[in-house]
Amino acid sequence: MSESTLFGDRFPPACEYCEFAFASGRKDFRVCCKKGLVPTVFSCRHYRYDPLLRVPRLPMELGKFEPEDFTL
Image (cartoon, rainbow, N blue to C red):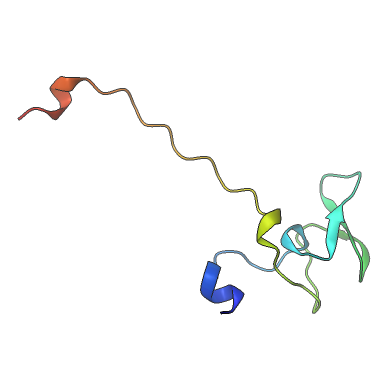
């Protein structure tokens, strides 16, 4: 099964999610094993998606409901 089958096309290639890129001292840059210091939005032909690098969004908080909200 390919990566696009598992995750769709929701994640465009970016070094932020690449298995060859590691965190650097700067927030907007990654250290790539193949290219050196690169911006997080950069991608090259060696890009390989690593799902463990993606931080999922937090779920939306539901409002407070009263029992009257569920009666007809």
